[in-house]
Image 1: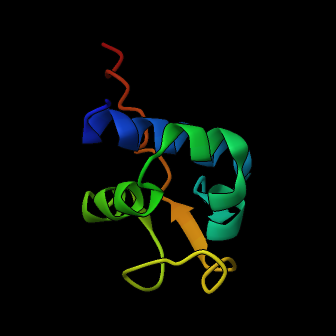
Image 2 (image 1 turned 135 degrees about the vertical axis):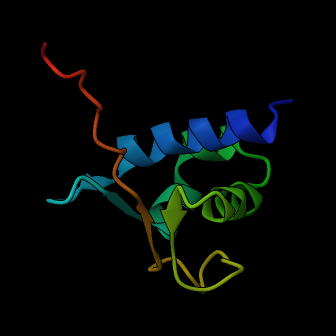
Length: 91
């Protein structure tokens, strides 16, 4: 059993695999694509709970609170772009 931090990290990987990178560096996927993906359904016992945990951590955003299969298949889940890499100043 994965802990929630590990599940959120796995979710980020799956969103990158299934989604489309946007010009601002974010990655977008619909709930239906995630929910109906075989690999995701095998990994996440409670996909909705993992999505809510990631949303609380401000890793991703979507409209609504509770997503339901069928009803919310077209809801876009947007994973925020990674923070810019901090480069050490050249001395």
